[in-house]
Length: 77
Image (cartoon, rainbow, N blue to C red; front, side, top):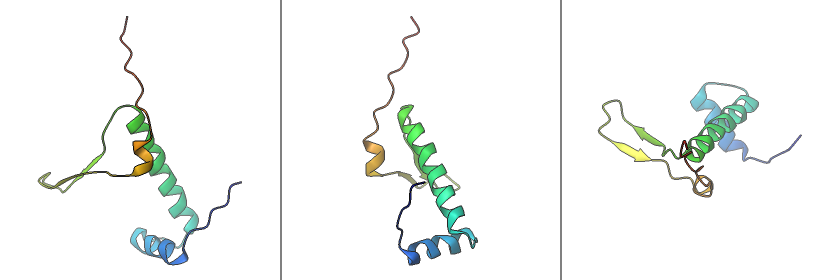
């Protein structure tokens, strides 16, 4: 089992945002989201966030995701 060190105040801040008392839940959710994002980038997708009216759009900027090479599309031949 891997062990990581994360600032307690940072985890508490996210726990408050997520309305949970479990640091493990925060970690599980964060890794699930990172796994999804990595797979999206690997599939050649770009990740954006938008407000409810889609008038204010932001592209996700995460250095670790820029290191992922998208898979080459199958030519179907």
